[in-house]
Length: 273
Image (cartoon, rainbow, N blue to C red; front, side, top):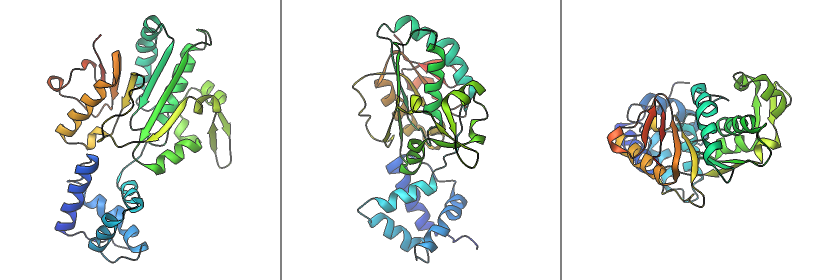
């Protein structure tokens, strides 16, 4: 079945809405919008984008808007994605934290956690590093995403073996239990250290009870306009402790004159002491 065509007026109001509410830039995504929403529109009994969008924007429960968001956002991820970050964490960040963190507590934030592979990898990396350092290190991560759908997948903690191929075999054996259809369930040892919450990165950051030692905000700002991205980075700066780090995606960049974070190397920034 051919995709429905979206009119200029409907395209413009959808693009404007998504950018204003979520910071997501869809100006060059007309074909993606038509491809991903056509079946949804027809299955819900609508014949065109106009009536579908009218219905979605008028739904006060927010259910239709969440469904729209899930359709339009891409959530492609896997364990140990962008391995350079984990090498740097193991060789530089965690040894540094070991020296300076007298309370032996490390708190991470996975700010666009998708289906959970990133925050779970973070916990596995930290447990692996500290396994011979004594049992009194308290490591945990907050994982947030705007999509309820991917957070439900993350909380279930069941993954196909293909997403695990970059993980060390030792971790696969230690932290996963085989399930049906080549799937594996992640260990409670990992999930108990991970808290999931729904959060829109356009909102003010309410997580201030304990400053973050390390924030992963990867492969989400690539969709944002420059001013939206700069504003987000500066909000993140306020919730990172001095000496803490921000990791972004390798396809992303931050204008160095627009943030107080110190550039360390591509995709890695640090808050000055």
